[in-house]
Structures are given as structure tokens and as C-alpha cells.
Image (tube, rainbow, N blue to C red):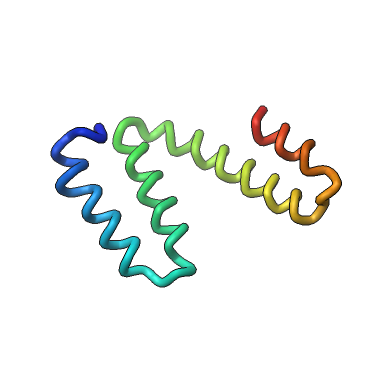
Length: 81
């Protein structure tokens, strides 16, 4: 699926926007994350494994930044690497 394709413009994008605006505030981030996974899986399911790894590493580093504010730069470096 490409951003300029009719499938994206007339089906996927309206579906994502409708689900996003209908969902409660605490679920909006999850809705966008799940649709992002679906979008990348459309091209190649292997991308979901990479995104899951990247999401878990960045989420963990973000939580560690909150817990240990003196070492934020270290956790940012781990996320970038």
C-alpha cells in the first residue's frame, strides 16, 4: 500500500481517522499503533517484527528515562543505536 494509492486514500485513511476519533482518549495511541503495524505488514510482514522490536526498545528506554533522569542521554543513545 502506497500513500498515493486509491486503496490508502479512500479506504485505509478514512478507516484510521474514523477509528481514531471514535475511540476514547486513552485508546487513541493504541489505535494509531495498531494501524501502523497493519500498514507496514501490508508491504512485508517482516516489518512488523522490526517495528515490534523498535517499539519495545524505545518504550523501555522512555520508561528508564523517567525513572533515572540523570542518565537520559545514555538512554537516548541506546534508542538511537
